Image (cartoon, rainbow, N blue to C red; front, side):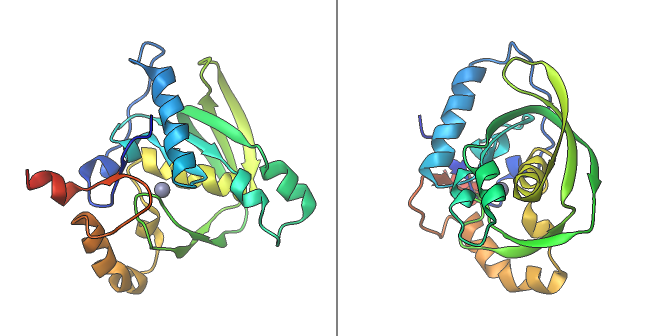
Length: 196
Ligand SMILES: [Zn+2]
């Protein structure tokens, strides 16, 4: 089932997610719905707060990035079909020299900004089997993980840009909060909700 994606301004996007237990109601269904919602919106990642759930869960599939012509074939191969569910993730280390990448977010439509992040992450997480593991990711995969991980910490990519750039997008963010945006995918907005 395709779920509405929560827009910028909704307080759920600012909550720190709580851990998920194997008993979490309809977990499998929630994960399946999140993938469906992400694919429907042509996203490469989606975090639970973006569908209104303040829990430590996000899904990613970097396949759309593999079609980018600028990539070396090895990296494209790695990105194609890289699909993974992260439950109770905890980034334990970020290393290397920060690099910039133009990020966007399904909750903040029509806003794209260069964001600096470190290239390599070490992350503890489990998949649907709830077996905890530690893995290292880098490049664009790490980038998507860092962006989605921020969501479960209540952080958005627009928090990471200069104050000048923040001022320049203020109007756009206000419009999104008020639901004054049109996207091909279903969204819901904080201000629109309050009016009811
Ligand atoms: Zn996002």
